[in-house]
Structure formats: C-alpha cells, structure tokens
Image (cartoon, rainbow, N blue to C red):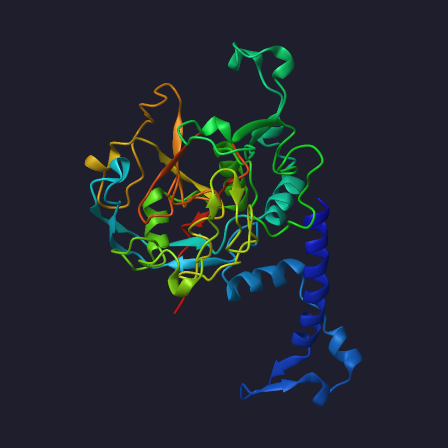
Length: 371
C-alpha cells in the first residue's frame, strides 16, 4: 500500500505545481497564448481555480498513452501481417503467415509498484498467498501444505540438465511480496517486474486495469517489431556489438550466473534498449503470460487472422494439466538450457503455478491515437 500511496503523493505534488502553471495561461480573442500575470495578479490567477484531480488525470490520459487504472504507459502497435513461429522447434512449427489488427501494449512488464497499487485498491490475494486445499494435493502431507511458490535455487555443484527440479524449490512464504521467501521483500525493487504471478492473478490485474492479456500472436508480432526473419527478436547476433541485448543467463547453468549483462536475477524494467516499436524487455527478464491455451500441435491448423489459440489445453508431458502459453523467456534462459529467447519460440505454464521468473504485461483494444 505504501508504494501506491507514495507514488500517488508524488504524482499529486508534481501535478499541483504543473496545474498552477497551466491555470495561469489563457488565450486572447485572437487565440494567442498569454500569461495571466501579464494582466492580473497571482491571487486572481489562483482564484480562478485548479482543475479537479479527476479532470487532470483525464487530460493526462488524453495527452499520453496511459489507458488503464494502473497508469502504465502503453504503445500503439499498428496492425499487419508477419511470419509466426520458429524453425527447429516442434511446438512452434510450421512457420505461417498471421495478420493482426492494431492494439495497445504495455511499454514494459507490470512492476511491483503497479501491482501494489492494484492490491491496495482491491485487497486481492494472489494464488501463492492463499491457503492450500488438501483435496487438490491428495498425496502431499498436511504439514507441507503451506502457501508458497517456486524459487530458482542454484545447486552447489554442476548437475545434468535433464531434471529441472534440481534447481527449482518450492519455498513456503514466497510470493510477489517476498520473491525469495521469508525475509525477502520488494523494498528497493519497486521497478522490477512483479513475479510469482499465476494466470488467475494476471487476469485479475488486467480486468482491474481495464485491459486484457495479449494473445501469443499479438505478443510475437509486437516482439518482432517488423523483423520477421531474424534469429533473435533484436537481430541475428546473440551479442550485437559485443553487448547483451536482454537480461538472460550467462555462465555455467544452473550453478553460477556470471551476470555479464549487469544483472543476476530480474532487472528493473527498461534496463535494456527498447525494440523498434518502443517496447522493453520483450526478451528475457521474466516470462510473460499470454491468453492462449497451450497445445504443441496448434500451429498446424491455427487461424491466420487474429488467432486466439486452441479451445482447450493439451501437453503430452502432463496431459491432465491445464496450461497457457508464456512468452519471452527469462533471466534463466541460456545457450545450454531453455534457449527461448529465439524469435518465435514458445513457453508454457500450469495456470495456478508461479515462480520468481514469471510475470506479465497487458494490452488494450482502445481506439488508435488520433492523428
């Protein structure tokens, strides 16, 4: 709550200053702008009144691309046709043409500050924070059924990469408020992406903000930003000009992250250059939920115009588990394991599961900006 209140207080203080200046300007009969102090006193100017906070916010939204209750900057993505998918990845094949209508997309991943404001306004409790129902976990001892989430925990020595449970640990108390479990917090990490977000949590935030989650076709179209034939979303070189273009994993996975890109773990949003559409962190940092159900065979007969995914979920690795698509990879993706920063690659996740490398961003169907 403190995060939201402080931001609101700072916004309002800055807003009052700007509004006082704006209130002291008017146009003469010829439409020429004049300063009120030229013809009147400061007292008279202030007496004319200050626009209501609601009116000021509305004006701000008109002048900038802030379209939701979360006040997140959004970018309008003009519609078009692109080549969707990736060669060599069975669940992202075949590559096929897809046409997308225009839409707005959050400039960056939803941050801890934004999510804090949502929770303060609604009292929402994430899946990771809720008590567990023994009926849903019949084979788990009752004393182990405590709220928590999955946290990347590097092993002490090199291990084979066939069993991902060697570096993932269910941590009691881990949630968006405490990303690494008890004793951790988001203080000082306000501009990092919110994590430990289950699909239901992302949906709830999007509804509150007056937005929705992107389809994976929209997500990929936005990530490609007009480049359909590059290996990575940023180009064909993993390190263009010798520099890392996204927050991914360097070093000996999963034992030691060398942090060559400047970060071990999640980075604050906008730490890397935006793509050609002005979007940040469309690769790396944290995985992002999409609205589509996941099926590895979907591309064989998917729609070519604004596809929204299959009607149900199926993953042969876990056939009885409902999964949705995740996109973009995370700070754990690397050349050794999970090279899902390759353009067109897909991820997947069980809808009630979160982790400390999983977040989201939203989109909006508001009309395009006026020319």
